[in-house]
Image (cartoon, rainbow, N blue to C red; front, side, top):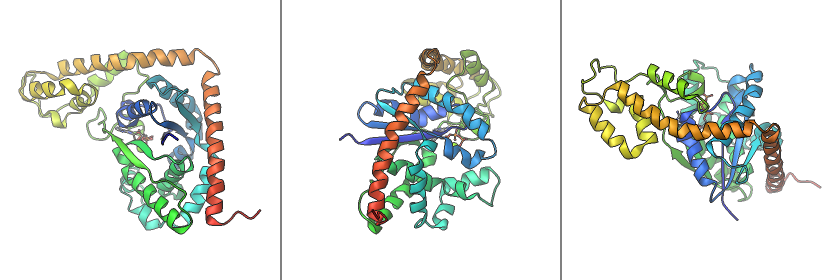
Length: 326
Ligand code: ATP
Ligand code: MG
């Protein structure tokens, strides 16, 4: 049997270049050798958007189109909707019996996201995010998880949950490993590119929108004149060169550091590279968009497959715990 890969994204908005470098690019290549699952995380979107559920509905099909447009192939990967797998919620309940509140409070990603949101009084669901991720991964027994680095603490927490469950009951769950893709900075140069910080270049942007975003992007603030030596290591644009054209990034680094490449020209170069990357995605998106109902069919078929796997895993889980009575 092929090993399984699982990942997902909260459907809080359309996906961006950061998702691509952090995770989507790896998902596309892994689907060739692994049985791949890609989850539209609508329930997890509620951890921060429970008061705006309309956003989730509005974004669900857009995120599905993002997946299909980057090259996630529905013949090779199973796309499914989290809320339609109630077994995930059931698994969270069992895990939550033996996961301590302190271990969640000390999870570095939970800590920094809570701080970013300015909240010290955390919602139960927000604090429990790593437990729900553990349930996503274990219901389908995935062993490889292609994610951005901010997700590493969650994968570590999943590994602990799996070990604890297997020790307590029976060794039926599998410990996953993370495959980390590079983190991309936002055009503000201060934070990781993120849907909710308004600093992202979306995958479905037109070339004009990409160029406008790049024009606004921060570069090395100490660089006043075109020929001043630059500091590429603190410039988000250099980060984009490194992520999208690593073969020429060293030359760009040198030319910027020596004051031979001005910021406008440097932005022009990355605009061309992004055009080559995004144009085939725009075309694929159009193909899927022009077939009404096709995306829904893909989602329903994938969700059906995930539901069957979830039922089987829960049968084993209940048997392992010993709460199967009849
Ligand atoms: P939100 O702001 O709503 O949390 P987000 O943009 O952070 O959205 P998520 O849905 O939280 O996106 O993340 C989905 C996946 O994409 C995760 O694996 C995450 O690590 C990865 N990812 C998100 N942003 C980046 C980024 N800037 N660089 C690399 N990976 C990223
Ligand atoms: Mg996030």
